Image 1 (cartoon, one colour):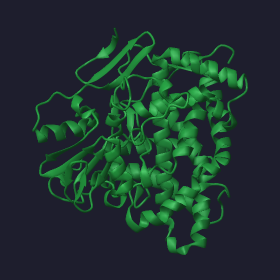
Image 2 (cartoon, one colour):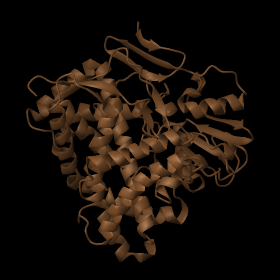
Image 3 (cartoon, rainbow, N blue to C red):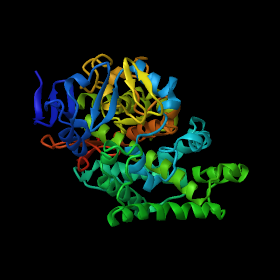
Image 4 (tube, rainbow, N blue to C red):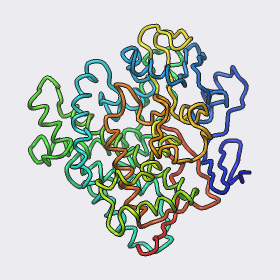
Length: 472
């Protein structure tokens, strides 16, 4: 039987020999039909509103304050929404658009229509997998620098893994997007600015449920303005430097600048360039930082997996630092990251707004309805993943692959994340480089709680202690 490391009304976490059920929200047991209480609960924690029956292969519909919500948790229906009828479900939800428009403007992540069609191929080219050799060296060097900094700390030193990983991925994306070191102060300012921004954004746009199809703008409080100003100030300076010819020829921003000079019809002025640079930066650094943080938590608890991971790294790399060329042989490292993405997808809710009336499965859908594809639910549905709440990286070994459209940590269809290969490669490589030399330990009695804001993070970060591996 499982022993419960912690089990409350909200969070379940269980461990037994060679089996680990990592922290997740308990099934919701509230009374049906209480729209207001459900909205209030979702505002606090969107992951805690799902009943056991929601984790099943189906399409369902409900009405909240007069607004139709359709929860799509069937691979075939997901394919219909994101691929077959993409044009009708292309638009991000009012909640997501309103939540991010102050920070990202019309950046690719929340744009649609002609703006999206023009810029998507451009961003695709910039983060294309063929450019990974260019970026791989940056990832290797930056992760090795962090390993050296950790080596200067005493064994057992306490750090917050989320903040450490955010700093690491911010520096990697800075060097890749901006072509130079932001430096610790600027990288921290962007990281802290986005963390503050997330904490200030409401998880629910009440105006949408009160009848405003576009939702209501986010109230731009002085504190929110300060968070955005910190981020924009740094990114604006970098873009302006590139426009003035002071950029790195290999950086993503410089590629954007050169493309605009060749194709003025793209209308990539300074503001648009900043929006795309900010989008790439935020998407690139935040999601990978969260993934690596969750991976450290999982390995700390499932130490039999960690032991096998260390053995693989030692076998493939010996004493030398893992490189991009080693990734095909680091199969367990990849499987750990892919299983982490299954259990803790960085963007756990993919919300769309219906254009015209449609039909998903056997549900008739009204215009301007909210379509929810929830990877948090999908990835934990027993029909697609046996023992779905357990951490089992072997699901992704020996050629095993999930059912199409049942595993979508980077979304799917035309709006699949263009940085998928960049982020996946970065997470695997950073994990290998750091795990080669260190073990990270979460205290046994620590309360680890998934928190869904714009992304999925451990509430309060992840305090850990650093421990050198023998010989490192």
